[in-house]
Length: 471
Image 1 (cartoon, one colour):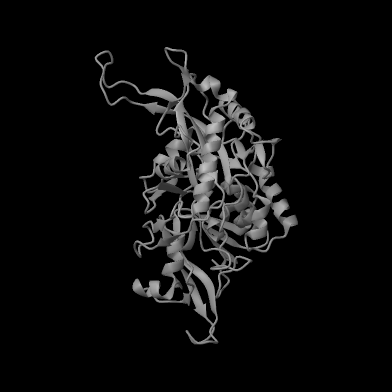
Image 2 (spheres, helix red, strand yellow):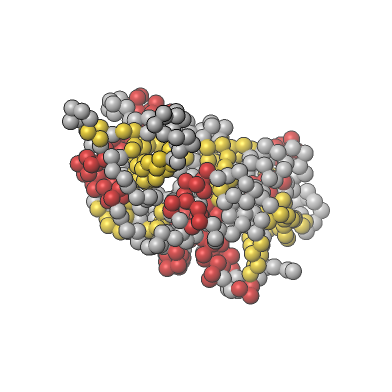
């Protein structure tokens, strides 16, 4: 069957893109994972941590990878992509994103596209104990003004949108396929692309030769999109030659300019049980950092046996509250390399966390702001009282340094506790691999529309921007 458009990846941008194109064109959407519906761990807030840790099955919705720095990470492997496995926070990009992204924007269409997504899958969350306390703590700590419920990026404290509805059910980019023209779209799951088929209008390698993308080769089970580009011979000539891959078009920056926003923070066990909550409130500071929070109920099994408890005993369930910060940007630049010519294998990635002094300064600013929040009256009820009446937090993992005015101590904390907030991006960025309209340089009829084109993470969370971009 012939199609006007083949979309590789039914993810956060791919699903709204497919739904939109299907109104006027014949579309084939290829997704390397399965469908999310009918999987309780995917469709509820309570399943968030389970989804991120269950990564071993071939059809698990989350695929893990570890950077060369040793930081664990994950990517979506399911229809809807990472919008199906994330924390559900929805907030539009900051105004500077449109100014400096390098892409051509029609802001009227941008706003209409956001609104289309928001009517379908975005809800106002109901704050309970922990998120309400975090909101109050941020305001006490000077992250003002209070902007209430808002989908816009504004300095201060706000309640953002959520892709979990009032019953706690997840909605993702996959839901946007409900708005497709069913007679014009086919969706294939467990289908991954091995390479792009290219056609030459003249002698290959001559100055008069033009290259066009005319189709894809795909097969069952999982794969990697960057592999598809490189295995198709689109990438750096010396690198492709090293792997024995025939060069179709020399694009030196495929796999370069890779970024990941570091996440740092603290977690503690509160004296009172808390509800499950993912990110609902955010403090947007002018210090280059955003402060967010979550609370989770997790099972705990003691490694030591007790004479008073018969083994095996059922696990205890503990509430863990978390305050975290995400830095703006980042400025630190990494890269992606092939680990194999097998499309199923994860590539090698290095993000070079905090190699830029600007990123380190922003992390120190953000972690200091977390310290300010912990010292507010709003956090008092989450401290334990000891025998002498002194109230302290019971931290799980490293606590913030006692002397938070000491930059080197805070910087050391940032380096020791760095993790990901899963907002990695780049590798096929605008101005290097694609032009301002997302067309791949040198290849006709081939565009890239996803987070790999970004040089900066838009706003507090990229999913709103990526769904808008697909639309």
